[in-house]
Length: 477
Ligand SMILES: [Fe+2]
Image 1 (cartoon, rainbow, N blue to C red):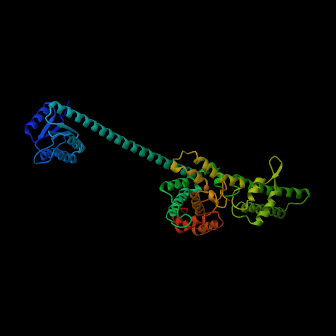
Image 2 (cartoon, protein in one colour; image 1 turned 90 degrees about the horizontal axis):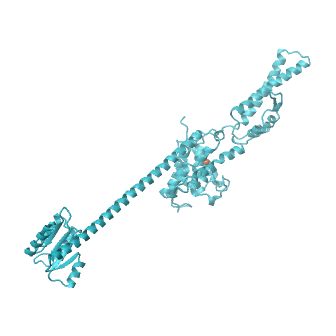
Image 3 (spheres, rainbow, N blue to C red; image 1 turned 30 degrees about the vertical axis):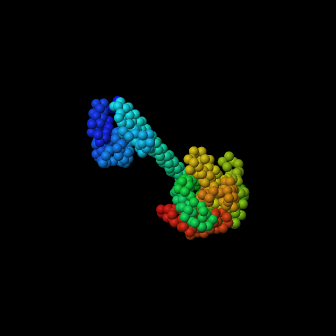
């Protein structure tokens, strides 16, 4: 049964009677049947309109044969299906016709019912092909839609990671404002170094190439390398002096109290011996004690500095060890307790061994934190790269004392960037900024003693990677 709107059918035959008969019969059946007397007229119609089925005579004098017509139609409208009609049917010609693109073959003379049956078969096939095409197109649209959806999700995940990494960097810097900008600068320097490695064709890393995903992995690892600092106590993280705050204040206060106690004792002793307290005697006593107090306070002040402790100051510290003062309970107690004395004896820097361990633990905290994140496979190396940023080639780094072959090359790049930025950074409480020139010299010394990778440093210097952050790490003073 024809569907509405009427299906266009083309009848091509040079025999007008037969053609008109067929056209009328099919029109009666509800088809939009049209006739053409030869190939060129048929082609002109096909160019204007789509005919799902075309009946054509095989032999038409003076023009295209039926098969030639069907071939030409196929060029214009490949979806049309051709049915050949001929009175010279042989098995061979039928096979030839079908091989050359006809859908079916009807032998003349035919009964109308044969035409109808052939047409219905062709239309059913046509419908199946169209359905299949539609299904295929739907499938393609669905695949495209799903692909877009997945790409959208992938973008969302990437944005999520990016946001999370930035938020984490903010958290690190809020914890330790003195290292503000350090994470981003180390990321800039390390990524710059990785790109410079990519464009270095010779040397030890000549064959090494980081693809864009690996570069992103390096960037995330660098941005997050110090995240573990959120697990380190703030007073240790930003410690500028060996003893600080109230603790230092109470040492000075006790030294002052000790002076008063000594004066009181001196006066009591003089009094018990019946001496008079003229102005000069009291003055001399006061001056003597005052000088002593000032000397001791200066000793505390000097030894409290994080710079290298001079030998004579170290020796003098023994004096402080035995000092006592009178506690309000009446007991005599040690003026500076053994813990504070040991802090003052730190030969260089402001940190005790325990505090140094605590700071160094930031690397393990970083690893613990990063390894809990379900990184995508492309970023799976982030925790390991960050974990090794304080390892040194000679095995003297921390926390695992890895040796050169076990340190990821990305961490070797990050180590150079990290040390360089720590040196040039302006606003650390425990050190002043070191000039770029001096910092580069220090890096070279560290490479010479096998702490940093010589080849990585060579690339860092030759490609002037350090220029990327010059000016950024200075305080805006
Ligand atoms: Fe670090």
